[in-house]
Image 1: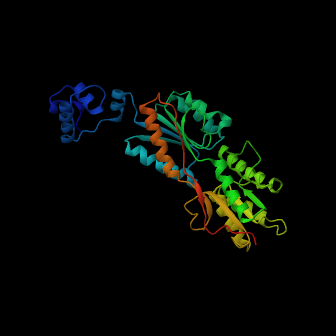
Image 2: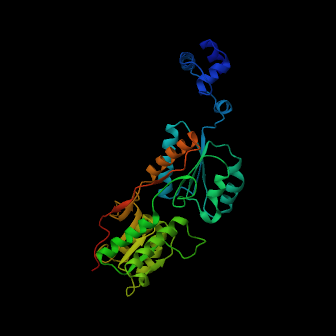
Image 3: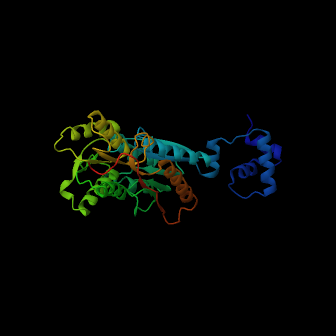
Length: 336
């Protein structure tokens, strides 16, 4: 295996000059830089990451903190982050830990402050634990992805979750529905994520504006297909009091509601309209009307912002409002 000394000897320069030429850390003439690069290529030399870190002060590694990636949104977001980081020759260290867990507390209190990262991407940060503020105290370039971002002092990417749920609910109201339930929310502030709370607020706001605040029905459920199915099955089992429409806190919950309706012999959309949020990869298969967003693109955008923060740390923070729009399919219709 070739060493930096071999490259330097072949290029006719000192080891220090060869190192500067390959790392870009310090001045080297263009002619010398090219001669060293040619020697490294001829010898199939690859710089050891530890040596590069010592020479440049950088680890070429980004820490990524997010909830467990067993949900579609986080898996897609991570795919976008990884694609962009690899394109920049960066590695990532992933910490996928549940919100509110002891493991997550240890991560923020002990692990992250001691790790050497060139930057941090934080996904789904919870304000109740002051997580973003704790990450900012590490002094590393930071970008957050999710609703708790505007005015936080760090660059960020997010959709407006409140507006997303408001638009979804208003779509049903415009179709003529008045008995509209929200599946996936919870009144337990301790158990509810910040983003889900914003979506619940958007649903309530739309009903309030339409004079339907007294008709609000919120059925707690985990934001998954089984969670949405279980909640909707209980909600729809009461024929006299069942709603004519459902807003899912996310597409997984909405798809679960569609499946529950079909199992109960309730036709969608002629007897029940269902709308979700996210435009999940299965939304088209279930003809689900939804509020579309692209988590993969948000991952790309987050890396772009982080790269800028790492290059120009004194620039003011940026907030990118990710695109979202109503996608009408065939799961919604006027009430019968």
